[in-house]
Length: 261
Image (tube, rainbow, N blue to C red; front, side, top):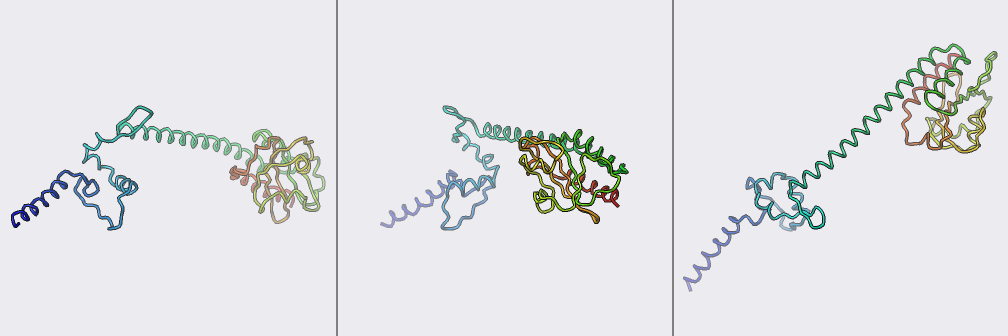
């Protein structure tokens, strides 16, 4: 009995040694034999293994033999190695990064063009010495350079004497109804019905809907509205940036204040 017990005891450590030497439990040792500490109630799930491999990207470097047993489906009937799959993923990321880079370059090109046109308009506005001259600047630069179909500047003040004919300036004794389209006294890009286009751009007859950028003008001696419109309902949309429009509006407001004083 004693001999049998001793044989049974001697066999137990040999079995444990075999399991450790074989390295079958991959969650107990890393490439540097660093043990993993898990809570007693932690289940070794696929998520736990995935998290561990993510934290130890060099795991397969120390366990190259496991790569032979990996099976990564690539397409029906075919398998690829881990390296090939990584190359495919990197290639896809490269394509995505190139696409993003091209988008950034296109946006930069558009902004450069808008900046040049805005600068030209700003300098022309600052050079005006009368409302007639400012009227011509709006027609020349906004309608031509910015490819707009309509432009109108509504001022809620009494029309100055000897102001002459003004195609794009309109004076009101009280605030017009369409001024309510401006949201929170900020530049508003919106779609307009034919009736609304008639009110905001009265010089032209409008048969269908369109879109417009509505920019409030506010100074110490007046307030008003600068409107730039298009026959295309999708030309001005709410997701567009208004940086350049806000700059144009600020410059125009200060020049108009000076001309009215």
